[in-house]
Length: 98
Picture 1 (tube, rainbow, N blue to C red):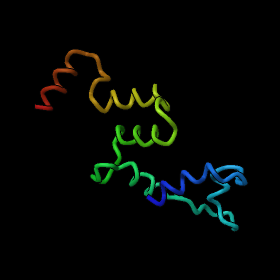
Picture 2 (spheres, rainbow, N blue to C red):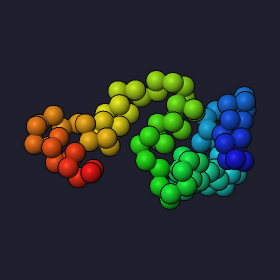
Picture 3 (cartoon, rainbow, N blue to C red):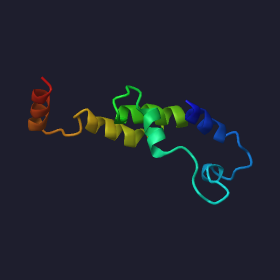
C-alpha cells in the first residue's frame, strides 16, 4: 500500500517536472516502484498475475472511469471470448466452458 500512497503523492509534488524526474535519484537511476510492484497492486485476487479486468480496475482507479475505454473494452471482449463473431467459434468456446 505504500506504493499506492507514493504514486498518489507524486501528483502533489509541485517541484518535479515529471514522475520520472521524481523517481530518478541523483545519479540518474530509476528508483521508483518496479513493474513487479505495479502488477502486485493490480492482482487483487492474489493469483500471481493481473488479468485484463484487474488491469482495467487499477487504471481507472488511477486515471478515472473510462480511461482508455475503447482499448480496454477490446481487451475484455477478447478475454471473455466474445471477440470472434463466427458461429463455429461461439460453439467451441461454449463447449470448452462446460
